[in-house]
Length: 250
Image (cartoon, rainbow, N blue to C red):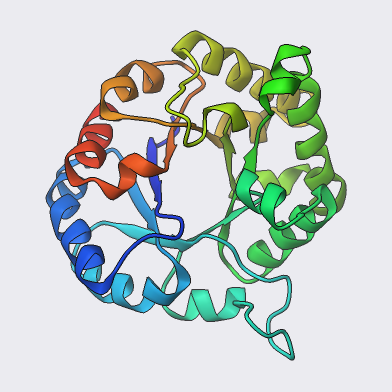
C-alpha cells in the first residue's frame, strides 16, 4: 500500500512572516492526517526557518532544486549536502519551469537525480508534456523519454527510492486541470511502462499529479488507483486550500 503524499511547491514566493503563518496554519491538518505525508518545498533561503518550524510537527520539507555539485566555485548554487544538513528529506528535480526557463535537459535532470540520491535525499522527478505534445498524441512518448533518461543513468531500481510527479505543463499555473480520467490514464501508463522493467518498482513508487490541484479537485484525483497524491503549486500558498487538499488525500 503506497502512502498518500501531498507536497507543496512554494516556488519563488514567501516572506518570513508568511512562511511562519503558512506552517502554523497547516500543521494541525498534517498532524491529524496520520495516513498522509505532508511536505513543503520552500525557496532555499527559507529552509532553515521551515526546519525550525516543523521540528515539533509531522510536516516534512524539501528543496525545489539542487546542484549536481556538493561544493566548489559554483556561485549561486545550492548543494544537496547543504540542504540535507538542515534536515530536508526531498528535492524536486526536473520541474517544467527548470526545464523551460533554465534550459535543463533530460541529461541535466538525470545528473541532478543521481546527485540528490547520492546525498541521502529523495528525488521527486517531475515529468510531463506541453499542450502541443498532448494535442499531437505524444504524451506517453514524452513521459517515457523523460523517465528513460534517468533510468539509463541511475538504473531502474533507483526509482524505488524516489517519487515521480506527473505534471502536464499545460495545466501548471493556468487554472486548467486534467480530468481525473485524463490524469489516471497517464499515471496508469507510467506504472505499466515501469512494470515492464521492474514490477517491484512499479508497485512501490509514488506517482503524484501536479497541475493546478485545488481542494475542490483533490478528492476525486486522489481516488484514482494510480494517483498517490499531489505536487501542489499555487494552492499550497493558501492555508485553507492546502488543508483541503490534505483532507482530500485521507
